[in-house]
Amino acid sequence: MSRTSIGCLLVCALALGIAPLASALTLRVEQDAVVASDVTRFGKAVFFAVTYEGGTVPARSQKATVLRDDDGDGVIKLAMPDGVPFIGIWSVVDLANGAVQLGTKENYELIELEEPLAETFKRDDRGGGYDRIEQFAGDVEILVVRPGEGAWTMNGTKGGEEDLDFGATGKLVLGFGRLRSLGDRERTPDRERTPGALRDGDVVVVINVGEMRASATTLGAAK
Image (cartoon, rainbow, N blue to C red; front, side, top):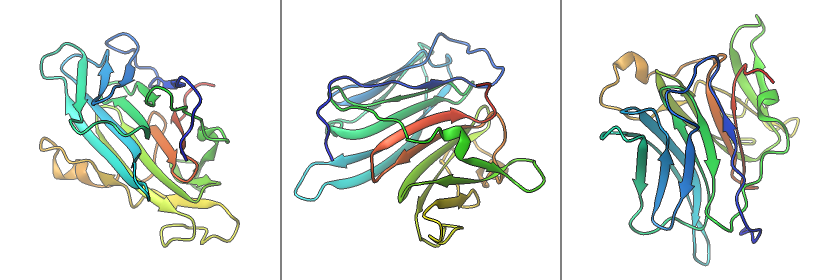
């Protein structure tokens, strides 16, 4: 599962029609921390990752948290005193404006999903919001960020009870009713509910856990 190619490929998708309040968001994966720079001053960043700890049988871990830029310097650090696992895909989203970055540790290559992520979201029968995602994948972790409102995560496995296709076509088909809100003491109860159908402007990160590939997109963004 480990990869030996040198360097990492960063992917950035900016929110629709909203000019960032800072320069381009950056993500740096260090030995004992993951650092986001050029975050909106005094704003929040959503960190999201899938990692594997070393061992005879590597232990999988999903990480998702919202941190604030308390000192207003535009830098938010997610400290990991026990060290950042070598095998892992990380992402960060600026909660204010939807800027997004993906990254990996040095010497671990980040590979995008085979199919363009934006094309795997399908609108409901009335042509309104996006009510499902269809992926050729066996196991995915998903982050959804609605800039200025909140963030949610979900997991889906092909053939599982959450798979709307039930494994019939080989695709993993997921609705968004199982999205779980990331905890934030400032949120009202309404904001902790699932967002339901996704809409243009939502930022989505999808990690294919089986292949350790990932992509990010802003729904409805101009191609």
